[in-house]
Image 1: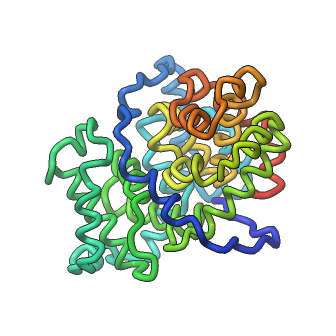
Image 2 (image 1 turned 135 degrees about the horizontal axis):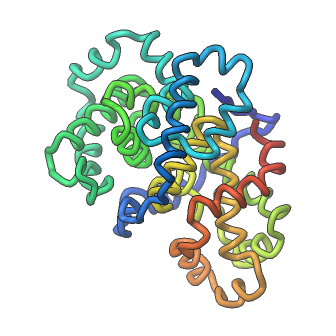
Length: 329
């Protein structure tokens, strides 16, 4: 539904691959699924479901004439019962599946490259270990996750597998069958976050520089502190961006962010990152408590629950969205 602009910017030279990957796949923090979802009154939920059903059943018409209305409804949150279907429509995954009948089955039946199979196998138990789908080694959730990730290594052998793809695929599998999850993953990797999962991480390095530049406009105090401490953006934003906050935020916030992300693209990830940085390090009092690099990184790894709540992120993210839109539309 939304693409990415290069804006004349060239990719930065790679040089921090090891640091960028260091924070991925090794988190032992409590699963964000344990956070209680914010409740929506049943009557409101039913009204939203009715509106979304009308949109999904007449998708082409809505896309052609009422795109702004779709965006506003995504910002309010997609009804849980229709979220998986809506993500497929918004991302273009449904169209990809229709254009490639039988392709996933073909990839699924192929043996795959042993080099990637071993790495994927080792990562399966790390994805949302407290969720009923993934709690059992060899259970149906882990099996489907393996199938989706293996299929992608065959679909894009030049890219292979990146650890950050596993939590992305796991969230998708919580909302749709494996074949649909695969095509949504393809769209995320190719359209929403192109280049993020390539071997040298050029795209994530570039977006780290862009995030830092935007931070100077949105929160000069936070920008000055990170500059003074010589903290590379890759040290705090790699997992945020590459995993689309699925390993960082409370579960209700993850879903709300993804609803908007599938509609509006990567600028949503930038907005959330800027909100977190501003409210974690954006005042003299907060900076005073982070005297060194270690303290600063720990602050960003242990964010205040208040600033991660969905309502707060949506409100603050919209207010800070103007500067991001100039880079990504």
